[in-house]
Length: 144
Image (cartoon, rainbow, N blue to C red):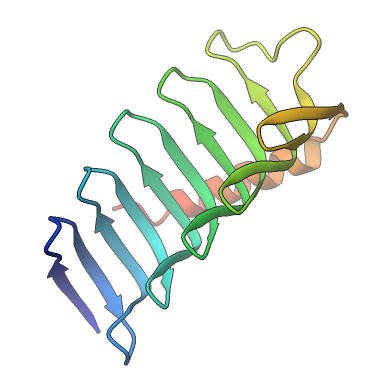
């Protein structure tokens, strides 16, 4: 059942609910700070494909799990720096590629294995980058 609810902190939700009264299935959430999320929820948390837009203009498009970036996705920072790749529990973690605001990838190229935003091993990973782009495109289909 689709329904809307306004929370005491000023945030609001429009979407589907489960029998326990939790956000579940497709929905749109506007947070008290003005950030917005379009996508799937599971037992109250962002889970599955979705798009998160932050008030500074930054945007994440991709997979979520238990309310955090998790899986494949693309994060565009407000200064146009971008990371395409893998995320784990809300952090850049795994294979991916950084693109700086000038559209370069750095010298040497910032592509490979990352842990917590730090490049640990340089390695080409075109398959992972494509998976991240595919996840972002799927997530974008949820934005109305």
